[in-house]
Length: 278
Image (cartoon, rainbow, N blue to C red; front, side, top):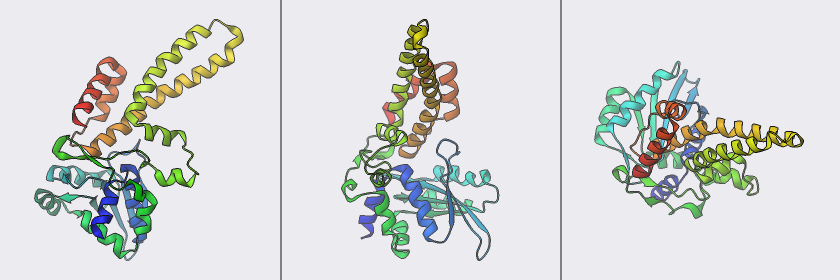
């Protein structure tokens, strides 16, 4: 039973897993907040409780396959998250996989609580939270994950139908623009959006001298601006996904700055490294 629950969790989408962890902690009578993907600094969930005494926990949720473990350097990094949240008293790292002996040692030294896949399955059983699992992953998705040759045998999960699956079903199968982009893949969206910026700019240049088409030109300008703004946001979200699914930890601010100053270097370099490692 526990192994079946773990398999279901391991094929869950990363963002859905964060919301699942938040929902599970709420089932445990905590109040939770899921950090905004585009704004946070690595914090996934903040959990607070006032009884029997005030507590605030910073939770890092790592959805990994069975062949990937969380190591000591990871715990060292996550321990510092407490300093980013005022009043936080400790950090909890939750994974669908396992922790190395080094991770356990660092966790004891740094006062970090660890919850591995087996313990997570026990919590689901203890708090009768199997309905939460079903909310975020369907039976048809189990078994779709494929092993990746990237760092340390990390697993890569097929995203077909998995990202926000319950949200899509609740809307009768209709996908909003954000869900469409997530299904497409943030890195693919960035590539298409960059191409769209050039195409729309060219169209604006062609239509600018035709006064009768001014409304269309104005609309294209709005589209061009939206594409321009969405590129760094989608790029950052892809970096978050890369960090959660591999050992590569791209420096977001450096790549984003490079995308502004040296786009013809920053974008190809990022995509090359992504292709090699993911």
